[in-house]
Length: 461
Ligand SMILES: *[C@@H]1O[C@H](CO)[C@@H](O)[C@H](O)[C@H]1NC(C)=O
Ligand SMILES: *[C@@H]1O[C@H](CO)[C@@H](O)[C@H](O)[C@H]1NC(C)=O
Ligand SMILES: *[C@@H]1O[C@H](CO)[C@@H](O)[C@H](O)[C@H]1NC(C)=O
Ligand SMILES: *[C@@H]1O[C@H](CO)[C@@H](O)[C@H](O)[C@H]1NC(C)=O
Ligand SMILES: *[C@@H]1O[C@H](CO)[C@@H](O)[C@H](O)[C@H]1NC(C)=O
Ligand SMILES: *[C@@H]1O[C@H](CO)[C@@H](O)[C@H](O)[C@H]1NC(C)=O
Ligand SMILES: *[C@@H]1O[C@H](CO)[C@@H](O)[C@H](O)[C@H]1NC(C)=O
Image 1 (cartoon, rainbow, N blue to C red):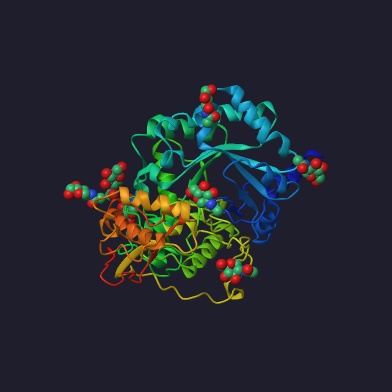
Image 2: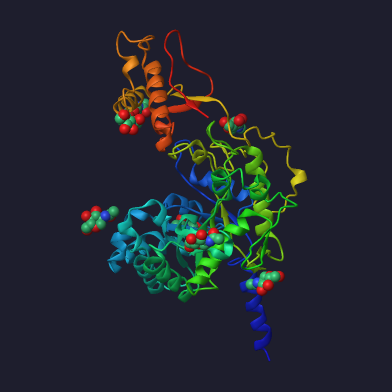
């Protein structure tokens, strides 16, 4: 008789422990040279109402700063060491002994990702080693009695070859059998999660004419899309994207693997030639996705109504050292000085009406006009000089006009020559994917820098 209440007690414990609950956390990326210390960062994470945090390594300073907190922690084996770990149980053991065991008793490490978007961003020779490395890490954890820690890897949407309609979701044929099937088998056997990075923002920017912005921001009251094969009705782009992964897993014979949103978010700023990256949209998306993901009872998605979807917003900070277009450096909830960029409460408990009004968006339509790429103010001159040489070595006659005696030689300054070289290089190679960045030395401008007889090449949109 005494067993019954005890059983219910444990049931209650496991439900309330937050392991699989509808709580939202934040990704703590560190690619900035101006970010607060780990200790300050942990305080900021808690002040955002986050219940979980993910880091992109197993940084000991951060794990120490998390000591004694109630935050659930997800750590990561970096992509670079997957190959070696996949062939050496000894190396897996030593990684776990160094990075998990000393912290486990007082830090709630619950998830361990072996690699970050390996299939999207790392050399092919690593891909087939992901699962073997996961198996070795899992075995090491088991040896130390750390069965509670779920092992997985994170995947972006580009592992699908089709995601529309959602019921047509299909993994890419080059990886489906060799990599994804063993991965799903592992996740199923160990009751782990499929960790998904999902950005309606990126889907929308690729086709803003045909995808409604409000549908991407969870703001549309009227747009509904019914999948002709499943008959499921969608009211936002996020659900569509998540369900395409659900259907893709089902197609490989795994209909029940739970999805964990490892990253989602919306940029609060970007370059002039980037659409829809602003504070208004970022606040709207993140507030709405938090509302959805913290709802009680859980909402789930059309294919999985009522399912809990644990999740993490990307990211804690605007990170000034991330390469690529400007949006990459503007996914933060916080400026590097720790100030919120807009009102946000990851616990989902603050109603929108309690937040300050948002600045109106001014780039929800594509920019029309000319853009130049110039040297940023106050940058390192040694670095600028190398970037100038690099830009001039690319493309066709990129720097002819800044040679002595030519139209753009004067004023004879590094800043001026670099600005010309960046504009010239970028105008030639933007169509093949070049960005106006140069490790932070360059920036876009809509103001024509041309002077006198010297005309700067531009990009016309
Ligand atoms: C973590 O905090 C506890 C007290 O809560 C302390 O005893 C322990 O030494 C700390 N561990 C580390 C690794 O700092
Ligand atoms: C992997 O192992 C090889 C051979 O032991 C070693 O040379 C290499 O530095 C290791 N790579 C990394 C990233 O640790
Ligand atoms: C379904 O996906 C396949 C590729 O897996 C693609 O060829 C086909 O066009 C998709 N169907 C629709 C209706 O988009
Ligand atoms: C979808 O609805 C149509 C018409 O209402 C019906 O004929 C079809 O069987 C349904 N398909 C599924 C998969 O439920
Ligand atoms: C933090 O940085 C932002 C952006 O640079 C700035 O607008 C804000 O005033 C700063 N806040 C504090 C307290 O320094
Ligand atoms: C400037 O950049 C060069 C190389 O690009 C580097 O060696 C140097 O340390 C930098 N100087 C400062 C002050 O950051
Ligand atoms: C340079 O010129 C060649 C030949 O005209 C052309 O094929 C190539 O695409 C040009 N490169 C750039 C970066 O414009």
